[in-house]
Length: 238
Image 1 (cartoon, rainbow, N blue to C red):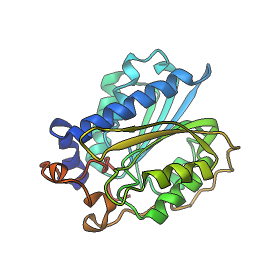
Image 2: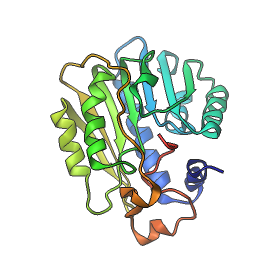
Image 3: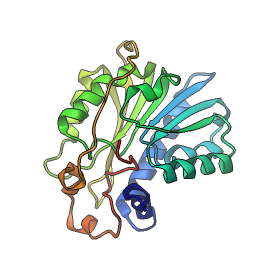
């Protein structure tokens, strides 16, 4: 069983997993509610089994307008996401098995009205976090929403992440912390003009597990019987 497949077991045992998922899903619902009439293009970077989006769509009135493009490198999680999409009746969802860190993966799916970047920022260098945020406007349609997560383990990078989003032309819509855990989620809207898409750009590289910032979490979270961390959303080796 792969590391990120094992990570998903935390949804059954970890308050951080469950709380962060609930926060992200609430932000997804709000983004869909705000979307203007017509097609809603969604990109999920390192989507894992896609439950953040795919559990929201069946009960949402805009589900028929969504055209979602989910990307992950872990074959089992991709298979699970495809099965989940089929069960949910989400006809407008495509799940692709490829390296989510390369912008080439999104060539047929941009610009997006909603971009999910969950479980990435705690597993890469701070420099790659800033680089990814800098390039996000290239994936976005005007006024697009980006939803992201990052643990608040020390040193807490989330204030800096929020500033980097502002520097990249986004305004903050929400920032939520999960009580009793380091988990946090944010939503930002692009208020600057989007930038031209560039294929072939590497946004980030996942660090070895022991080098990831997400390895710095509290004792209660370290005790969880999973292979990842509360910030480590299924983002297999991207």
